[in-house]
Image (cartoon, rainbow, N blue to C red; front, side):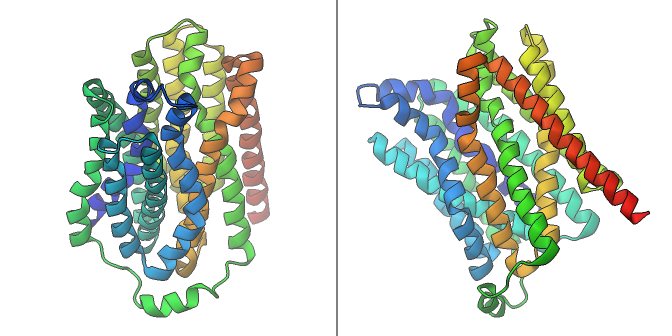
Length: 386
């Protein structure tokens, strides 16, 4: 029950944008009379990501200071309330405030649930759970996008009812999750003075940079795919949703293979394979001339996302001592979502100047350079060990 609870909690990772995105045009239409309504309506989608990034370090400290379980339960309750508030709030400003709180609570959920995986499981079992976590995140996105679209056809406010999912799994959390730290009070007193130093610190800081850069690239899929399809005269938003869903479905399936890949090749080679795969996918997307080619390219590129998230999470929880694991994961959460929030500032200027297809191709080539770097690092490590 504990394992399934952790996985079901992890599925909320992409609920925040998935519930809102299908009904965004209708939301904008209702508030079109307001100044800057187009920008404010888009912020309903992206604002949680900014607040996840801003609150990540503070949430990470709270996870170490007060414990994983209390922060997770409090965050899940707050997440459901702030998410459901979109059903009843009349003011667009009030909806945006609710979305900001949603981001803070989601940061608490993602940081604490991943810390629990690191605390509860070791070795092979940890690899399996981290891989399944990536699967539930990706497949949860597919399910929530489909349900969000169906509910948005009734009314865009009805789609916010999806946040009741968080309330439904609260009883299972209360029953199955316990605080894993043997002496949380003693640990809390040490948290502020327990530094992260040496090789683990360098590895974790490098992972932060890598996550930030990777998410700038990967968030092009949900944010730019529909615009690229318009470039090749595919205007149906449903087909755009299917293309993005293909990327997420492929990601979820790839996560299932992560335990075997990590055990067989190790962290560095897995990163090299992941960046090579997404590079191929992006270049194929940019060169596509029809819908079928786009879907095939999305299926290839999605394999990367399914491997990246569990590989990065496993590297963090393996290198961070138990007493600072929350802070380390909080920093990773910040890097993830700051990259997502800033992704349009990278891709849109290239798209305006040269076309969205060119933006995908250019991104594919520099992703190949990152893959080459990891392959070189893996070769150097193997030579050093031999």
